Length: 216
Picture (cartoon, rainbow, N blue to C red):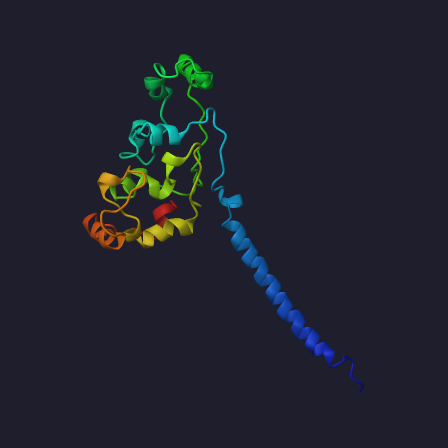
């Protein structure tokens, strides 16, 4: 019986199989890279707000503590969005007639809340409790970045599950003294490799990594 395929067909078949595997692997890798990109996570993306509030000015220049505006961050699952009255505590006296602050004055006059757009917006199926993390020694800067250097607030971290798990699995790398939770530009008094394990023991840190911890 004559040979149907040439010997080169064997090589072609092998090359085709290897090429298909490489293509499939490349596509999977591309999807993984895309899933971690800022295009998907929205990290470093500016969000249009009713008024472009500058943390750089209020926190960095004026030294306003996080808790002045985010009053419930230590006691509630939510950090809280300040009511317009909080803004007017200062701006009824400072820049009281500045055109850029008219939306704030209008909100106060009409007793109508400003519609702030959430920057760090977790999916609805994710449960996160601010107060627990604050009590356990997680600083604002750890998750939100150097807000005192942000003219406009952006999401610095990816907020993906692997990012959360990195901290839950290695809390000693990120924990800080409770007295420095709201400190921007925090530097540990001794190397983090020394103070981290000490604080983990002192605060009784044993973060869960089971699905039900965050997905409820």
